[in-house]
Image (cartoon, rainbow, N blue to C red; front, side):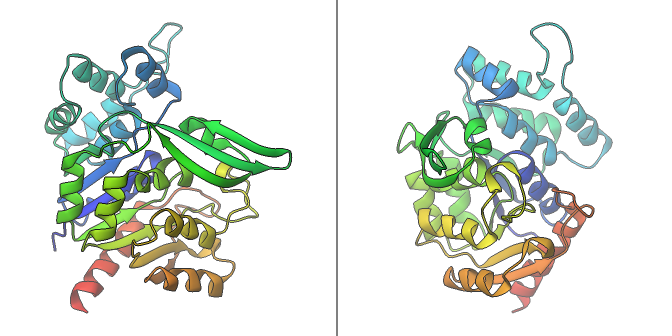
Length: 315
């Protein structure tokens, strides 16, 4: 089995998905959010007017080969300087990507060059042809709050009323659209729902490609997507509400499988109903690294992916 898989997302959530998928197939394309404005990425983006490299770097590191060369380069890419000077907080991988892009290399060509150096399994692409910003409106106890910036949106409190990317209607990368059209499987999540997952549906050409794609789609829900949890943007949201947001922003996109950890399912009937409305099947399993952890176990994720893909092929 060597299925062609496209994985959408950003940050640690996408990295977890990629780590699990690379144990099943080497035909992986990661399409990564490019709106980060915090930390090292924000500093480099402001100084050089380039794509924020952080999420792209993490995707590259997650797809490094499992031999000594790949593992050592993954560690080097993730190594973060600690100093009293201007390098403080910058990962090596961010600086490497910034250097390639600053010398006028096409962003995708630069990513492909680094992928070749790292012996990356698959390919890493930006989700848009230019860097983006995220803006959201939340309803709070004191009224409406407009928040701009990926880091700010990801930590805002309140009920999401609208989500936008700036500039509006950006172009998608043709390589990403081709990968979506050619895919057999497409995954979304886990990750920051408002700032890493939903933005993929706000690029018109990419949303249309996802709605038209013949690939089976798998949505992976977060581990802290429950109203009794206090995890940043997820406080007050249920798993079915997260799915409802996908349906709102991409009403014509079918979700064939929705994967949830057992601990976040409180109203099984409501969740099943939402999944059915989106044309899918609910898969509930133990996916945590450890009790109370907010990180997926990559071995458990691999097993779920393999089971879904194998059973679908047999069926």
